[in-house]
Length: 226
Ligand code: ATP
Image (cartoon, rainbow, N blue to C red; front, side):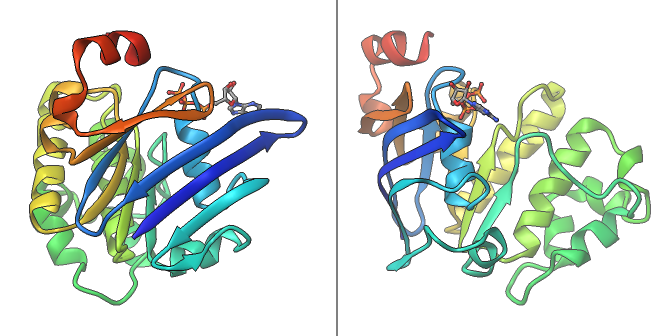
């Protein structure tokens, strides 16, 4: 479904990615891992054309995404839950969901079934939600675009345990329903049991790809610092 090959990305003159390789098959959940500053967010920004890559290939469903503007990439079927849960603060929960809607199986009712809190707070302004509820809304907004590939950047960071459990349970459900997903998350305890494969970045390069079962203590210690 998605194949990223030898991706190189710069912020002005400073190079952040030196050769990222990444692959997601249809129906897979792939974890993009690595310590802080290793290039996970930059890889996602490059995938979505927000910080365009200078070299390399991004192929999604057999087509090259690399020179497309960000809005075209979303139209091709990629949905982003960005770091920092951006929602429209002055719109209601319902309005936040419907503004991103694109045709497909996901609609407001299905998002509310996945996250019942969003149904209970349908008419509340987004800025009155807790941080965790805003994160649910950010995921709901991405699902409303009916993405064939869902991409989550640190979707559970800094949230209360009860909310984190609800979000992980939703992510497991999405995976069981066959949603293809690329995910960055520091909660290895929740991430590894549900991920099909892991790709590790170190200093802007892919240094390891394998199954969670193959991610042994040596690799964790060397690349993840845990
Ligand atoms: P984190 O988990 O801390 O978000 P990350 O793995 O997502 O880390 P990136 O945010 O992609 O890492 O950062 C990769 C490199 O690019 C780092 O060296 C970082 O300092 C640099 N970088 C990130 N954003 C910018 C920017 N806006 N301008 C210049 N350099 C940047």
